[in-house]
Length: 476
Ligand SMILES: Cc1cc2nc3c(=O)[nH]c(=O)nc-3n(C[C@H](O)[C@H](O)[C@H](O)COP(=O)(O)OP(=O)(O)OC[C@H]3O[C@@H](n4cnc5c(N)ncnc54)[C@H](O)[C@@H]3O)c2cc1C
Image 1 (cartoon, rainbow, N blue to C red):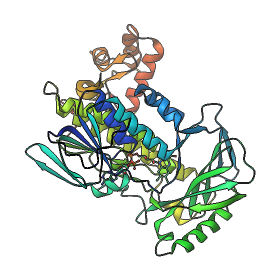
Image 2: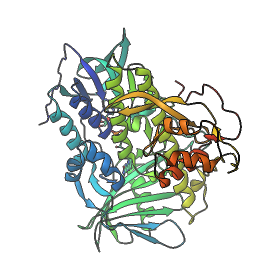
Image 3: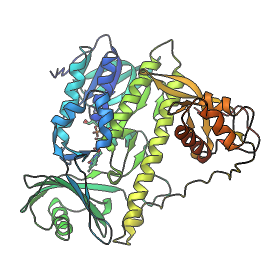
C-alpha cells in the first residue's frame, strides 16, 4: 500500500526525515520504520529519464536477504544474466555466470517496489510527494522546507543521489585527470538475433559501453564518455554522434531502432565526511557515487542505508554513545571510498585496447603499502596498545576493544572467532611468531590462527620495535 500525502502538514514532526526515495532512502526508511521510529520519506516521485536496467550482483544478495528485500528486488528483475561478454583486451572474452549471474533489474520498478516496502513496513512512515528545497537547523531540530510545506525532524538522512551529493560538496579523486567529468548517455534498441539474457562491456577509443541484452531482443545500455563530447550540441547531432559510436561497436553489430535518453553524470564523487552535523547524515550516491565501471552502486546504496539506520537508532537512544555511531559511519565511508577508487582504477588499468587520453583520466593503482619485515625467531609485540573501535551490534553501534592495522588504515575487532582481546592476551609477553601461533592455537583452530597472524603482519600490527601507547583508531 503506497500512501500519498500530497501537501500534508505534519504538525508534530517526525523522528527522521529521509530526503530522496531511491534505493538508499527507501531502505533507510524501511529499517527506521521497523525500529519503531516515525519517518517522513520525501521525494518528488517524478519519472526519471535515465537508464532503464541495472545489474544487481549476486554478491549483494545476502545483504538484500538479511534486510528482507531480496524477494521484492527479484520481482523487479528480468532474471539473472547468463554471461558477460567483454571487449576490453586484445581478445574478446566471455565470462559464464553458471546460475550466479547478476540480476537485471528494471530501475523504475525497483524504486517503486522499495518505496512500497518502506511504506507498508510501518504506519508511522509517511511519503511526502515533494521536492526538498532547503534545510534549516535550529535548537537541535531540523526543518525541511519542501514544495509542499515544512517538516520538522530530529534527524535528517540525505539520500538525494548524485545531484544531492554535488550540492553538499562531493568531489572526485584529486589526482585523477577528470576535470572534464564522465557522463552516461543511456540508449535502448533491439537486436536482430537475440540470445539468452546477458551483459556486455566494450572499450571504445574515447568511451566505453555497457549493455544488458534481453532474451526478447531488447537492449538497454549506456555510452560513458567525457562531458565535453556532448557539450553545446543539439539533441539530433548528439544522437547522430552516439549512433556513429555504436555503429563501430563489435559487441552490438546488429543493433536497430536505437533511441537515446538524457545524459546523466556518472563520475566518481564522494563527500569528504558523511556526517554533515550531529543531526544530518548523507547516504547512498549522495555520499559516494561510484563510477559505474566499478559497479555495485546499488549494493553500496543498500549498505549505507542499513548502516545509517543503525547510526540513527544509536544517536536517538540516550543510553548509547553517539560518538561511536558517527565514528562508525565515517570509518565505513573511508573504506567504501578506498574500495571504489581501487575498483575504478583496476577497471581502467585492465583495458588494453586503446591508449588514448580518455583511458588516462584515472591514475594507476597506488602500489600496496609494504609491512615491515618480520623475523620468525625474534620476539614480536603489538605495534600499538589495545584501543577501541565502533562495531554494529544488534542494530545499534557501540565501542569494542580493537587492534589497529596502521599500514592499511583499518582495525580488527574480531577476525573470525578470534577477538582483539584474545590476540592482545597472546602477545603478552612478546614472543616469536611460532610461539604466538602456538598460544592462539590453544583456543582456536590452526587455519584461523595462521589467517589472523598473516592479516596482522600485512596490516603492520606486529612489530619487533616498541609499542606506541594510546593509539586512537578513529579520529572524529
Ligand atoms: C548510467 C548508470 C548506470 C548504472 N548502472 C548500475 C548498475 O548496473 N548496477 C548498480 O549497482 N548501479 C548502477 N548505477 C548506480 C546506481 O544507479 C546508483 O548507485 C543508485 O541508484 C543509488 O541509489 P540512491 O538511492 O543513493 O540514489 P538515486 O537512485 O539517485 O535516488 C535519489 C532519489 O532522490 C530524489 N531526489 C533528488 N533530489 C531531490 C530533492 N531535492 N528532494 C527530494 N528528493 C530528491 C530523486 O527523485 C531520487 O528518487 C548506475 C548509475 C548510472 C549513472
